[in-house]
Image (cartoon, rainbow over all chains, first blue to last red; front, side, top):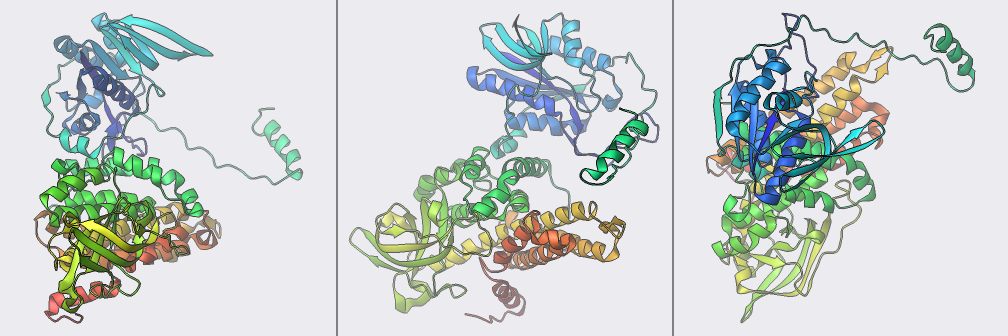
Length: 250
Length: 384
């Protein structure tokens, strides 16, 4: 069986991002990039299947040359090979452009099973996996928290408001991974050292127009500092007064 | 001259950092308070290959270069010096010594066991009356028809009580002095072998530190590593390797002190502002940062020389001396930054100080390092 995991390289969640001079993109200076955390669940699920049934796992990534770092993380975790669709302006693409480009490549790769992370931690669009399924006309389930395969039928679960929904889908199909699907492994030292020997095919990404345009970006306003108004019973009266008249929540 | 880490080294650093923060750090305070050995962590270290990093792949390691080895050791040392000590002894004193001095058959028998964590190793050189004066071995090895009979006591042995394999140095022929010393690979389940725990240490509370007691321990001929008379050379070679790891671990302590101090100084307020805004606090932190950077560069320099396959005795001593003293100084200063809170175990810096102290003692005291450095540059040995 052939599995493709679509990944994205995103700024490390510890990084404090800055808005670039153009006011509508992120300043890449000093930013440390990592494999998108939700994509780790997707990679882990694919590798578990590989260990169970000998599947071939391919990492597919649209990004700049620098995205090889995230690709290598996936290879170090245990994926077999990778395709990097190179675009120096990858960060400027919206979900529609990315989805169309990935779908083109997936048509050529002909996988039996495709995993995505449920969303990228940087733009949070949470759309690409489902959009690719739409373009390719494949069944898809977003936000899965469990996955089991029997023959060509996948049984998956996802959390819905107040409960759990169980669904089946016939492969080929697309699933986007949510936290809880598995416990992503640390890449082992041997995995890291063997990652560089694994084939990474690089090619220019197809040009696909954006459907939207970023007009501006702004950081959220700084939160005002907290206020200590006293301790114990004596503070209660003042607290109620402030909640009523200042915060106006009572 | 290239100060940039390569892609492998960065990937190794990212993994080791994440592992240290997510797996080792969460229980460190509790293990320390309870004096509880980190057996579960050792198991997890094995799973990701961190018990055999620099050992070649054909013996079960990952074939890491020495800079990567230092990076891993630093990241572990940054959060827990007790775990780092386990690693330093297991990898640098035991595995790398076997790799360098053992027969092919011995390497094949032991290295895959050690790198996979199926066996843990310890290093038995120091004795109650033989520390810096390591050639003065009182442990004896007497030749028998089928092998050797070992008798004696070893002291301050990290991993002693959790090990499956001990490197034991012993005197085979007292009149020959250090030329009579031999090194043996001793299974710790051999009859007559015991490892009484040593209590009351200043630091490294969750590290397992024991004596080794050998009472008529019989080993076969194939337990001898190298030739009779090679023991002292092997012991010194092992310490070269171990010191590099200690230096890297101390870069980790110093970095841990910087991280903790910056965090505290930018949160804690006094006289109406963050204490980071006081020049004398910044001075403490600036000194810490400079010494951490210097210690790291000296360690990597030694690693670079080791990567060329050259003996790095001098560079390793320079790095070990500087980095261990820097860690000790940084830990003391980090407590000053934290004030009274730094003196309590609510913050990690008091542990950093207790754990830093042993580094200027074990695997060659700072004084011994100075004598090695001095003899290297003057050509005159100031000790025998």
